[in-house]
Image (cartoon, rainbow, N blue to C red; front, side, top):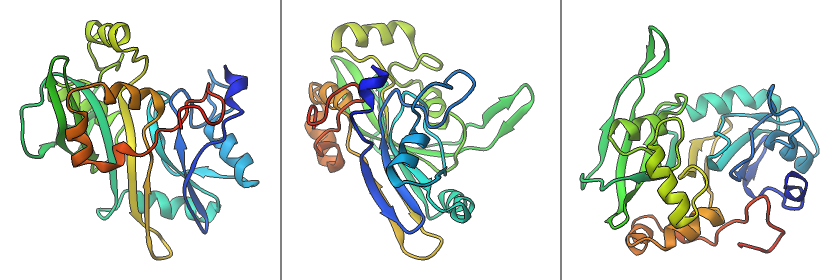
Length: 251
């Protein structure tokens, strides 16, 4: 499967002087680590795509798909990272979560993130509901993290008692199995839909990543799909193929 993945180049979502945003598929690591030395990671793929060294500005978990920003100029890596953490930046995720989300308006979550036995750091996310159903009992949430902590989106929706479906670290194993068996969902229900920030040299970066085929097929079967698309039209963009699909399939 890893070899067939090379047939599908990463989709470029936006590109400018010194930076590029690509659509990271699920199952792809951002960069190699001790346990992934032999993988053709996103960093290497983008390097080969642009023909030069690149530097990741932020990270997405292996199972999370969506907007991924790289610097193609080393001097911009730091400024882009700072811009991503500025108040004018906005990261938008969609999360398929367990349960009926009862709030009708935005909910602010400010639970600190634990980094060690006695170390907590502040974190803030704004959560609102795009769609919900009682059968199956689930909701699609739009989450905008205003800080960039590890697993922040996953932890904050869990703290609302709505863990992301197929989240093995923070979710419900029984519910995860049900979604695998009944809807064929085999990975985390989390997607980085949009990335916006003020560029260091001026101008505004605004990139949107369509859903990948696995999420798009599951979401479209759920009762709230039409409502969610009305609230977040980017969900209806043509879905992207998975890494194990040949070009043209799922697009």
